[in-house]
Length: 234
Image (tube, rainbow, N blue to C red; front, side, top):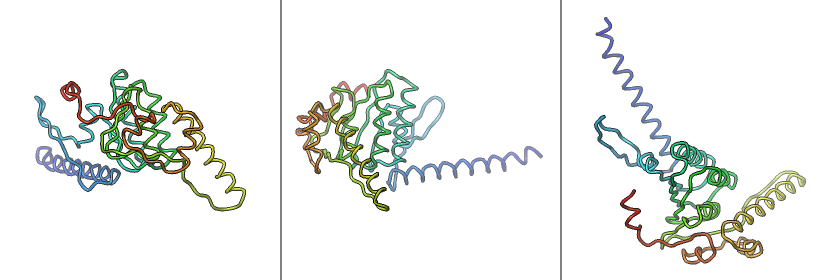
C-alpha cells in the first residue's frame, strides 16, 4: 500500500515545490519590476542547480541596487549585506547602483548597514545614481567608489509634503529640515566638501557628469574598462 502511495506523494510534493518556486520567482520579478529574470544553471559533482542571476551574483559577493529605493528594496539589500558579512566579514562586497533615488528613510537603512557591517564595500554607478542613491554611491569604501563613463549623478535636498492641521504641517516641515541637515552632514563626511558648499549644491537638482562627480568627491575614479586582474579573479 505504501509503495502504491509513494508515487502520489512524490507527485504532490513535486507540484508543491514547483508552485513555491513559481510564487517566489513571481514575487522577485514583481519586486524588481522586471518581466523576466534570467536563470543560470551550474553543473557539479552533485548534479545541476539553477540560480536566478541575482542569487548567482550574490555568491560572488555582488549586490545590485536597481530602481527606486523603497522599504522592499531596502530590506533586500540590508539582508544581502548582513548575509555576506556573516559568510566572510573581511572580504569585499561590490555594490552596483542604478537608481533614481527614493524614500529617504529606506535609503538611510541601507546607508547605516553599509557603515555597520565589517566588510569593505565598493560602489559602482551604472546608468545613474540620483538623490538618495548618490549618497549610497559616495558611502562606499574610500578609494573603492567608481562610476562608468556615461552614467550620471544627481544630488538635491529632500522632497516632501504635508497636509492636515497647521501644527501638524509645522511638525512635518521641521522633520524635513532635520533630514536635510542630516543629509548635508553625510555628504560633507563622504565628499570632503564644506557644509556651505554642500548646502548650496543640494538646494536644487544638481546633475553631474562622472568627472564632475569625481571632482566633487562623490566617486574616486571613472572606469572605462574593468581591470584585467579584477576580471580574472571574479
